[in-house]
Amino acid sequence: MNDARGREYDERPWGSFTVLDDEASDHKVKRIVVTPGKRLSLQTHSRRAEHWFVVSGVATVTVGDDVYECRPGESVDIALGQAHRCENRGETDIVFIEVQTGTYFGEDDIVRLDDDFGRSSS
Figure 1 (cartoon, rainbow, N blue to C red):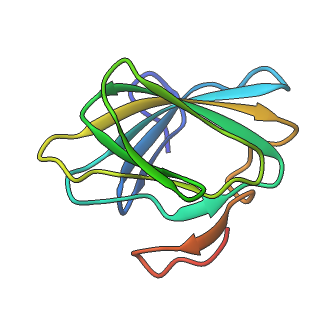
Figure 2: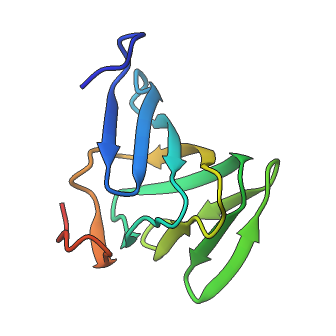
């Protein structure tokens, strides 16, 4: 589905994402919104790394065995193959910008290790 500006947009059980840039072959940029009380699946990717920059809200971020809070203006790097997730324990939306780098950026490059919504890997 597309948003009002014609950009790729998708609603998920945890919130939504909008693709801001996917024209280059070496990166993709998304705006991700995680609603209160929700979290993304604990996941890995075999063909991309990610950089998350928190715009608003307080994100509880899991990267590998580490769990910490990311506040607006803070960022986190997720290496290729590293398990990660974002959780919203607050009362307002979390908004972060995700920059993906690698060789492939399709939604089918997700291996879900744990998922609150019963989804398997894409």
